[in-house]
Image (cartoon, helix red, strand yellow):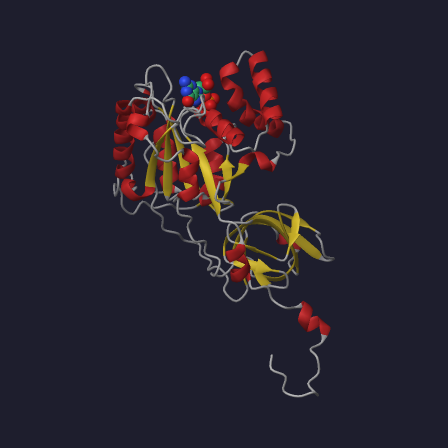
Length: 405
Ligand code: GDP
């Protein structure tokens, strides 16, 4: 600031310590981050693909991988060694051991961070997806290229259900790993790859994807580790038709990353809460910031309670931070709110722009496998963010808008 005279007093120390962080500027310095979810029919190769990708990307080291090979062979499941990487996590989860978060992150050659939001090995795929993966930027759909498998996955299999779910959750992009290209019945033949591509492209277009601009198909062998992190080498049988085209990691490294709404008013969905926290007289809430950002000292409001609070402390991945923004999973200590009224499903908002509250919603719904017809008064549960509430008096307004093929 321009000095206007020698008598101007220095600003008092507290004013300096209250200096606001320029979140937009700091956010721009952060490494680009892509959230992905792996989907696909059981046995298509999701675990093998993820495990082998993490190994080739250096996340799982040689020593660990040798141990996985050995354990898988001992259990008579040699062909599952790479899947073992993921299944180890599943067993650890089952025992309540904290998962090494490193296993579900990788860094691409350009320095982009890729997070696997719902790594395979997780058995409760669908509820997890509804509860947690709604903010995935991309779904990696793994399909089995051997004859008849994609047809099956699209008629009665999970490929169909997963794709409908991915679409209705609003995940904008899909990368299809056309897997098992090494299989003797496929033998890296272009015809098999094209057959799979045509079938899936038609289904995806039918549910509303612009295949041309938002879907990428990549042939892979998860088992042999081909076309995952390295392009097909010279002399490879498929180079006649797939020479110098991207491997899976190239695709993940170049997909456009959506701009996150960090400049909008704060919306954080509360998944959990407790009395007490890092500051006296405070409460602590956990959840994910859907839009906007927050920093220490912010005036916020818990909706729909309408309770005011002040942000006292923020942690992201167990580390104290000064600010957090859309896309971050955070823990926030708040001064002010009544601990008795805390519950999952609350939305922490900017105080000057709280989320509107309503007791009526109109929604377009996609029905998967109706066992009985949906009629007026049919009992339903509304999952809205982290909230699960029985909804009263549903009324069907119109039907048959879009029938997924
Ligand atoms: P998931 O259920 O989708 O996670 O599938 P898994 O990764 O557990 O794999 C199921 C089976 O398919 C295992 O026997 C794997 O070894 C096999 N598999 C996975 N990927 C490939 C591949 O690229 N080629 C071949 N030939 N087999 C594969």
